[in-house]
Image (cartoon, rainbow, N blue to C red; front, top):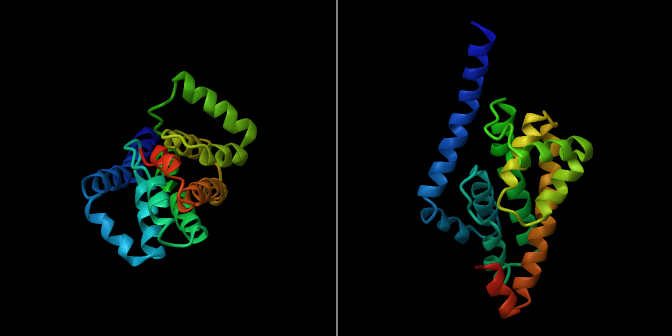
Length: 183
């Protein structure tokens, strides 16, 4: 088998499950709400699923905000942050497959340069900053063959810090701030 054919097959083996997960989560998102009744473990599973979508945005921070008045904000932050970090493995795998759809685009090239320079610290910062395009950071980390354990750890730390901030704000009952976050 030629190297090019092997690369295409490898990419398909990795990308097809990623795409299937993303489409399934988008289609069945209302049914997945039943996990909330499972408490913190359910929130953790929903957070993994919300972050497993690639390109199709599913706002996981809404979960942190809506569940923090019900459960202890620290546990909500840990469940949503660590779950989100684990869910981002799909974006990482999409990049690791070697087929980068974003290649040649100026924003992607700047992100590649930035991640080469700052490594896992870039992942932590990008995971902390609310941005719907974090998938691009995961794809970039995979493309650059960043060690998966480091990517997940720093992603989970950044997302846990962000989710903790959101959970504390929403649990404190500041109505105008809650409405801004859940829009």
